[in-house]
Amino acid sequence: MNNVTITEADGVRNMHFGTRWVQGSMRLDDPFALELEYVQQMMIWALFIHQPKSIVQLGLGAGALTKFCYRHFPQARTTAIELSSAVITANHAMFALPPNNSRLHVIEMDAMNFVQDPGNRGVVDVLQVDLYDADAHGPVFQSAEFYQACADCLTPQGMMTVNLFCDYPDHGKNLEAMDHAFEAVAWLPEVHDGNVVAMGFKQAPSVDFDQLYARAVLFRRDTGLPAESWVDGLQAWMQGA
Image (tube, rainbow, N blue to C red):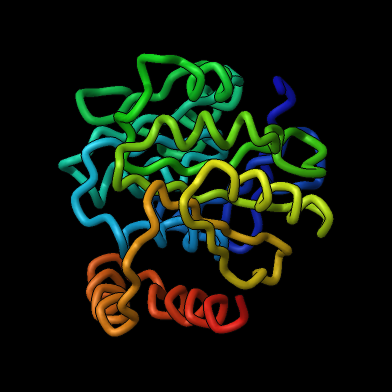
């Protein structure tokens, strides 16, 4: 994945892996904002987990989620796992990613190796998974073994969000694999770009929608993200499940 290319249009800088597929974006006048809708939705975990100590991103992309978590959750250690040194270099040079420090760690490593490392068992509060190659036909890892390893990394109240950008048969494949690993699985409606954000809960949550909406209002106040719409999507999923 050394063929990292950059495009810019309408004040937004995009990362590609040598193909037309956008692997991440940054608004030039607000580098720590979340530009893409599905990336914003990946933050739905914040309505369930308020004070995470460990946030891990699998797949750095253009660094949007990593930077956002680093800024808005100062009590947490934010870690990004990225296989490509070229992607890491591009993030520092072109996407305003801060250098590693006591709260931010970007590690050049294979995501599967990270989740299978016994040292990472039961220590991650939030796991954000967005793993795609240059062709972006589907997630790089889609197996039951991968999702089980992800679940094993989480603390008892931990939560995973994952970007599913793939053909519909593969949506089902991923969700079925997640079902075997997590006590509860849910997903939001597909966004206009074709992405579906799914959630895996280590333990099934007690969902009070009035409480979720109240938290969403506060999160929008603090971050500007349209969190109420995520609760709408989750409620629609529950009614249709």
